Structure formats: structure tokens, C-alpha cells
Image (tube, rainbow, N blue to C red; front, top):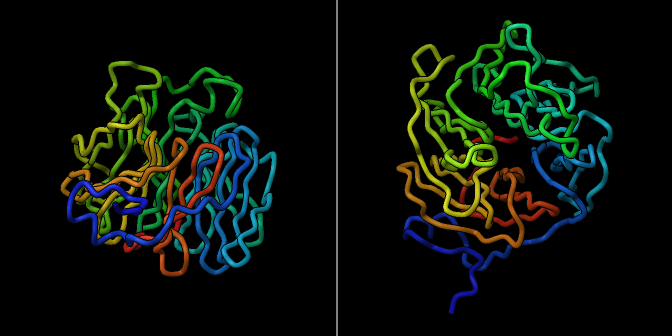
Amino acid sequence: MSDSPHIVLDPRFKALIFGHTKLEKLWTGARWAEGPAYFPAARHLIFSDIPNDRLLRFNEDDGSTTVFRTQDGHHNGHTVDAQGRLIACEHSGRIVSRTEHDGRKTVLASHWQGKKFNSPNDATVKSDGSIWFTDPTYGIDTEYEGYIHESEIGRSNVYRIDGQTGEVTAVITDMTKPNGIAFSPDESILYVADTGLTHDPNCDPVIRAYKVRADGASVAEGRVFATCDDGLYDGFRVDTKGHIWTSTGAGVSTYHPDGTLIGKTPVPEIVANVTFGTPKRNRLYIMGQTSLYSIFVNAHGTKYG
């Protein structure tokens, strides 16, 4: 009997994993862990504990986890831009922000058409410097991950912040609760998870794929890329070969670019998000509900963040 931590559903998954590596529990103590972002120069991972309104930092060199910042806007998802700066989606701030190299915070976007965002959730940076982010209502629905407010916009969209002008445009307006977001390696496809089942029993738990138009700033009508069989998809990342490594209610599921579910990595908690770390980008960091896990894989993230 194999003691591999993975479940192989398609032979193609075998090329992406090592049979002898183990799932490691690195830290525990969060209420809802989210938003992993890796910084190779410092060899550390920044992640969120949303209900406790704090950011934590895992140090790869000594294995320690310490508080990085507190009372900072109930951060959810993060990514890292081309200059190595932290891009943050803030629930109670209802903004997308950037932490500069000197520690100052810059607000990149707070409104669309004069109305406040709901509660930005997750983001990805395109090679042209634009930032694409999702804006469901989870941070304004209750007092647990933010503060209760009525949605000023009245729906949950996906937005793009222009990297040169800062202009905010809505690029997807037909999803229920857009959540995790990432581009394919060549940036020809934008993947977005819909967790609308939390609010609408008729909303399927899917990842949708949107073809990026020739202008690089808008997308065509989306299609269903995958449907979750273990709870909901939340955050996910894409490797250099185009495979999607996504959170689910039972761990991490891995999809081939053709949409086939090729393997699973069970985790003993609901998983909210993942990212690739180490200078080789081959360590998959996994955010369980209360804990940080990791496992080394034979795949490499497309970028940090």
C-alpha cells in the first residue's frame, strides 16, 4: 500500500508529485487563515488571519511564525507585484492596497463609479502591471470578517485596475460571488472561482475560464472550467505548465489545463487558499482553516504571490 499523501486520479498527476514527500503542518492558531503571498528575497510567507485582523509571517529559514501587522483592515487575499510589493484585498477597508518598500500603504482602488467596493477578496497581477481582483460581499455580510454594510454597488463583480492610469473597470459582472482569481501562464485565460453557493443554493461551485481579448484589458464570455465535488473552490494558483492547484473543502485538487481533475492532496481542514514558495517556487503552501501546511511538489508556480 502506498503511503503517498496524494490521490492519483489520472496518470498525468504522477509527474507533478513526489511519492515520498509529506504534508507538513507548519503552524496553527488562526480562526480563518487566508491570503498567502511569498517573498523570495526574505524567504518568508505573509498570510492573513481575517477574523483576528492580523497578518502573520512564516520564516522559511527557522520555521518560526510571528505576527507581522495587526488592526490593518481585515486583509483577505494577497499577491505580489513585479516590484516585490504586497498587494492586499482588505475587507473592512473595502479597498485594494499596496505596501511600499518603505512600509507605507498606498490605496490603489476604493470605489467604482463613485460607489464603495463590497469587500475585495483576492487579486492577481498581469504582466502589464494591471491588477485584477474579485469583490464579493463576505466582508460586509457579518461582523466576523469585517463590518456589516449594505452593498453600494448591488452586485459582486471582478475589476481591473489599470497599471498606468489607476482607472478601475468592471471586467466580469455575471458571477454570483467571484472569489479566487489567476491567469493562465500565457495570460490568455483568466480563471475565477464562484463561491455563490454560500448565498444562492442554485449557484454551482465552479471555476470559470474567460478568454482574454486582444486588448489585454477585457474578457469574453466565460465557460465552466471545473465543478467542485468537495465543498467550494476558494483561492488557487497556476503552475508553469498551466495546471490549477485549488483549495476545496477536503484539501487541494489539481486540474490539467484541459479541465480534467487529475489528483487530490487531502488536508485535515477546509482549505481556503494556496501559493507556491521557496526560490524554486516548488513548495506548495496551503492555508487550512486554522493552520498553515506545506508540501513539496514537482511543479513550479508561474510567479510569486
